[in-house]
Length: 438
Image 1 (cartoon, helix red, strand yellow):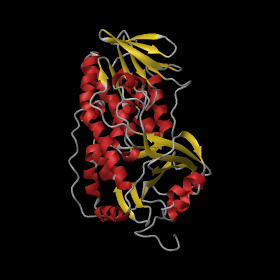
Image 2 (tube, one colour; image 1 turned 120 degrees about the vertical axis):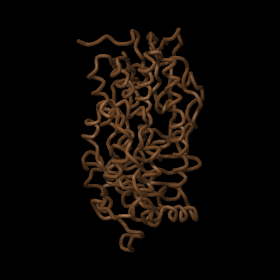
Image 3 (cartoon, helix red, strand yellow; image 1 turned 45 degrees about the vertical axis):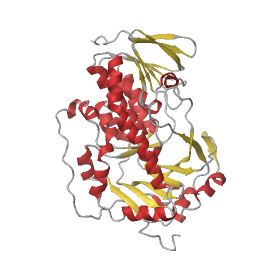
Image 4 (spheres, rainbow, N blue to C red; image 1 turned 180 degrees about the vertical axis):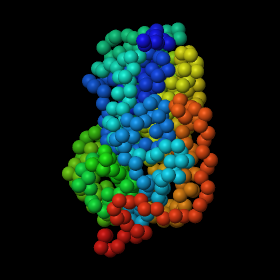
């Protein structure tokens, strides 16, 4: 027999993306009734590949969808940064057994739609979750300790609380923060998904690889059991043109990346067309909560992609919010203040660190040479230590997994001597490519 929900009026979640569904799942697992409003005609996820740090897998474990996500993921062997100009290896972070022991979960790459599907299946398996399409939040009004949520068509929903997980152009944020539309960042992405057989053999590597060049970088990694490869090429310009999932021809794209050496350019010449995406960014804000209304994911703290943590932060938000609501026993104004206090600094650090990492990737001239020298011959443990703050899942995420309660954090990895580890499934360039490869 199904137990009665803890709240008579539902928690309304605006947005049925990865963050919104994860939030619904976390709340429903704790006995709360939830209504998810998706403005599209069906629940789905735009985009292609996504990188998942171990902190994201701790969230999936807490939401009991870890096996579903891992089923379709590719567990790569390294995070690799190459100098796009010279072809030399700059940074290589092993994602080996030592990495997994240290952070309690693996690093993987997967398709955004596969994550979304796993969360959607989880929500559909819980009777406390109502999923509605063609439903867009247009406004809200605080009513006592609850919220009246107004939809585009004029319908009103009496809700216990409202969570704005409605992305960059959040209608809920416009009422709480009031900072207008997010400005164009000048960072333009060109995306393509390649069949594995179309990927140049010399680049079929078991890594998430980034080619760093002046004002550009190129990222590629395998997807869906090595059947596909994801390609994302980014250029930074003072006056970048607009675009949201628009087609772009090779004639537009290739000249922007011409400073790269032959190997990454061989990859860039492979797609017949790209999809153009203008990235947008907001600086961190000190408050994203108003009474029984709060924000989550990109609606609260949109970030550039350079740390590959945007979706991971939304997932952490979801569990933190659910845990706070549980602890406050449905006192949502108090729960949302607690949630914001726990998340504010961590998410702001990711936002600001992503900007700084972008400068590192796009270094030119002497700065590029200095960057390469700084990272030359570093040992794996030093990279793992530097990534500790982001890949170590917060305590409230780890504690949300019943199977992990009482588990102590593993000790820091010992500093060891450098060790050669086979990482690639195919050849890769050495410190500098041969003239033949050029």
